[in-house]
Structures are given as C-alpha cells and as structure tokens.
Image (cartoon, rainbow, N blue to C red; front, side, top):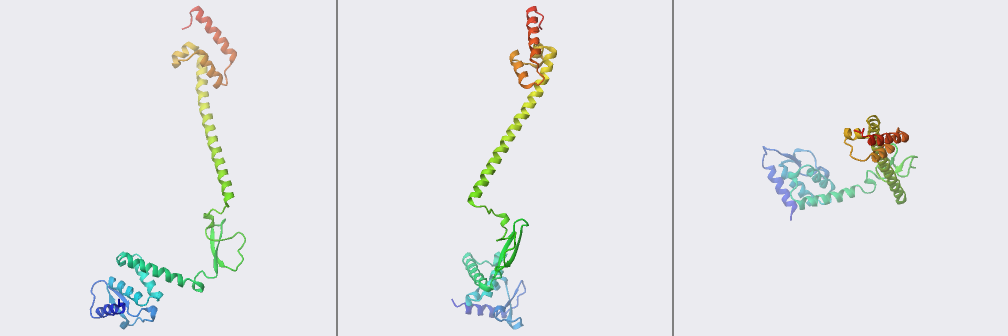
Amino acid sequence: MNYKLHYDKLIEKARKRKLTSYKESHHIIPKCMGGSDKKENLVDLTAREHFVAHILLTKIYPNEGGLIKAVQMMCIGQEERKMHNRMYGWLREKFSKRMSKDQSGEKNSQFGTIWICNIEKQENKKVDKNQTIPKGWLKGRNLWKKDLLTPNERNEKRKLETIKRNEKVKLLKQQERERKKLEKQEKYRSDYFLFREIGFEKFKIKTNYDKSYENLVALFKKYVPEYISMDHKAVKKRRINQIGSGTVC
C-alpha cells in the first residue's frame, strides 16, 4: 500500500474544507522531524482523521521513534481511537521496541545508577553503581516487602511459627478448661452450701437433682475447695439414722 499517497490525499482534503465541529490541529511535517508551528504546516483534522494521519506517518517512517510515541500517547484513555485489535497490537509492539531502543545504554535514564534500600527505614534511593553501598542499605528496591530468607531459614521460620501456633492453641484450650472448671466450682460450691443447710432429700427436690447421694458427694470433692470429708460422713450418718427412724422428708 502506498501510505504516502493516502497521507497526501488526507491532507489535501483537509486543506480544502473548514471544520465547524470538534477538530484537532495536526502538523503536516511532524515536529519530531523538523516541522514548524507555522500556519502552512498546520491543518485541522477530525479526531479520527488525526489518528489515521499519525498511523500513516508511522507506516511511512517506521524508524522514527517520535511518531510511534505520538500515536501511543493518542491511544491512552481514548478507546474510540483504537481502530481494531490488530492495529492497536501493532502499535503496542512498535512502541515497546522503540522504548527499549531509547532506554538502552547511555540513553537510559537509569544508566550508571542502581537502586538501594534501607529495610529498617523503608526507604529507596538511586546511587552511582560504582559507589560503595552505605552501611544499613541493600541493593534493590522495596526489599522490606520481600522474603529475604534462605530456604533453610524459611523452613526454620515455618517450624517456629507452627510451634508458636500450637502453643497458642494449647494455651487457649487450657484457658477454656480452666474457665469451665471455675464455672463448675462456683455452681457446685453454691450447691454444697445449700446441701449442708437443707440436707440431701430437700436438696434433690429444690434443685431437681436426679442422681445418687454418692455422685453428688463426688462432685463436691472434685469442685468444692471447702468440702470437708468428715462433715459429710457425719451428714451421711445422720441421714441413715433419719431414714431408720422415719423422720426423713
């Protein structure tokens, strides 16, 4: 395809008309190729024509980096300018190659420098690559966000984290057991003093206790610090005597 012919026809058409709607000013000879801002080098184009004009220029002068960058910038945030996937993909590829070329060697804005960072301060800065790295600084960027451990150190770290996690779970379970034990102690302590005051038979009626006397005493022994064994033997003896005399109610 004769891209130069199509470009010239587009410019000639634009020169012979006057746009009253939205328009964009276009340099016929691009500024990156020595074009001026003089009136004779400017022409009004529609947004689509402007984009097409720059596409044609990149086809005519494929090695001119400024033209490739110009089209790429026109594409940013302008979905209507993206003619179709193949064309846009071609532009992206051309732009990427040109940027790689422009950023190579001494043209690179990073040429002769390296990034270093201070993990403790969480700071980055660029220094001359031949400069001795200051104490407390490391080569690279944002290293405080990265895992700098060796595989063995990482395994040891995982083991320690597992041990800490297991210890925490064990502690929580122990605390839960102690909490439940305290709750039972409070409950049976209250039951114990009621039992001493009214006796087993009335205790059963008042609390709806449905187990044996021996079972209740075993619970008191387990959960009530104030439990007095000899006292319960005396209570049990009195109970037996009451049963025998028919005075238990």
